[in-house]
Amino acid sequence: MFKELDPLLHSQLRLAIISLLVSLDEAEFKYLKDKTGATAGNLSAQLEKLKQAGYLEVNKSFRNNYPLTTCKISKKGIQAFEAYVNALKGYIEPDEKRQL
Image (cartoon, rainbow, N blue to C red):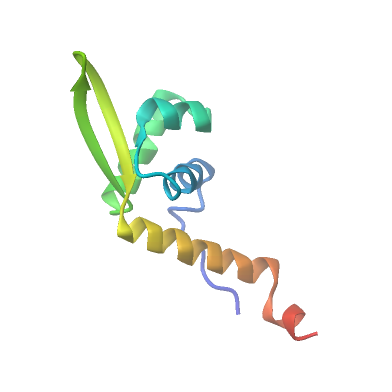
């Protein structure tokens, strides 16, 4: 039986954000924007969705009088990512294929 994929992570941009953050302590908004190729507005909207779901911690501060947004994946975000990857593996290699 196929497991349901987390619709929040099934978005290409949100999955890219989580994939980047899972291997980093934290990342700045500009880094995520550069790595994903997203527009500032779209990235900001997707970060907010991930934050509301509890997958990210977003910190807004200032550096040299300029706004600085940093993001960090939460424990819930790591668990959601791992569950998503495991569910996806079930689509790539279903049980029937493993039994052959």
